[in-house]
Length: 219
Image (cartoon, rainbow, N blue to C red; front, side):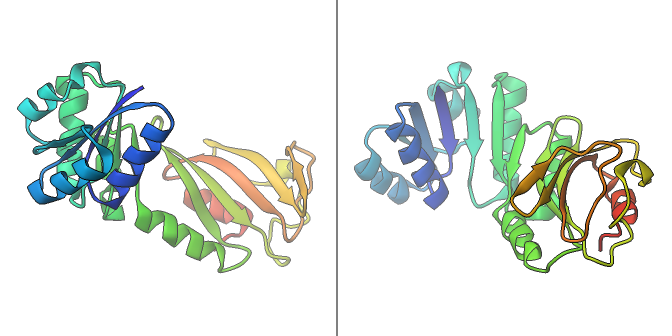
């Protein structure tokens, strides 16, 4: 795999080093000259000084043969431009962008970015997991089809506890993938009865979370 990474901060540095350690071909683009020089000393000749939003820099970096473009700068607008140029002008097969502000995630997805990574969103989801049962937490977002994988913990007093799956009024675009009950993983069927303390993993189309909350009594 040939990967081009734009942004030589900590994420860019460790991602580049990890890819190199696993035998992949990588090129790291960093626009700050001093930072690029230090990265060159640490990583070798896989570092290029330049602006990743500049088409000429991307062309010199061999973007036409890149398998993936990863933009991990500290600026969402730069990451979006880099991925848009790679995708639309050069036809890069897969583009991945760091999203610093979670409010920008929908914009990135609507503009065709294959995958987004938001540290803020990930940490927020982990914090929400500590709230306890009866809470809906987004585990992952799938850009194609605008689907989300949701985990819902059922409290003992949840309206869904004691009901069979077929009795629930689930959204049309929703599939219950698994029920986690203690150390057991259950593949739910229509006659599967939910219990308080269950953790339910569901696949739902974005916009259907409210109906899923209502069906499972989640907050």
